[in-house]
Length: 271
Ligand SMILES: Nc1ncnc2c1ncn2[C@@H]1O[C@H](COP(=O)(O)OP(=O)(O)O)[C@@H](O)[C@H]1O
Ligand SMILES: [Mg+2]
Picture 1 (cartoon, rainbow, N blue to C red):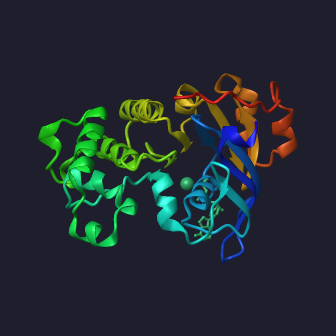
Picture 2: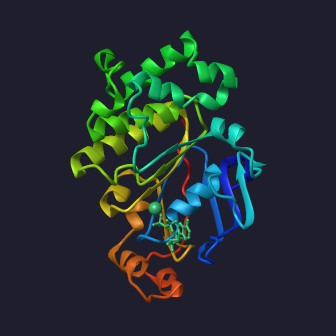
């Protein structure tokens, strides 16, 4: 893949927490424009740490993160917030704010501070927020409801609308359906994928449900012990590779040696 095709690149990214835990170990990853890339791996594998190293919530101990060919600088959170949106597992809407205001808050990095503080988002933004809410299936009757009154599934729909309001080229999602039941989880992932395609965004999404990863991913990247140990198309995720990814004590070499193990690069879907 050439540099021009990659929306996100990690070069030798390492994260060591203050207590000495090495959560990421020299990770190399390149995600092409428009791809829906799923991070799979057991708890503690380093998925959330990788996503936080990209959105700037933690500063890597080593290596470089590049967005669209530009190295991201630590501390430049405001400009990063305009280019990278994050959807969280805990959904994290502001409970007492309305659905509409929660979506508008997703665009706060693009506003002068005084306007953000006064809640003056402007009519164009309000229209954009209403359209996004309609896209995720929330109609006008829901706009002024408090976020806390919505079901978990509805809240995550708002989370998706909020992620796309700033028209980010990259959307990160950290186990976005972990707190939802299976049927609603499928609906939410389908919405996320549809919104990403409509808006031409690249997605890096961690999941722990293998079936959902198979169904929605363009590509599956498997992590264990802070390293990428698997990189394949969803249809290549067979039992042998899964066993190797999740089995304790299996060496990385065993994952690589599993059938159909050649790591492949997949043509990114273009919007
Ligand atoms: N703030 C932290 N301080 C110390 N260790 C942490 C911290 N956050 C995560 N870890 C550790 O880093 C490793 C990777 O964690 P994490 O990125 O949360 O994995 P995942 O999201 O795949 O479950 C784990 O060993 C975890 O215990
Ligand atoms: Mg996690």
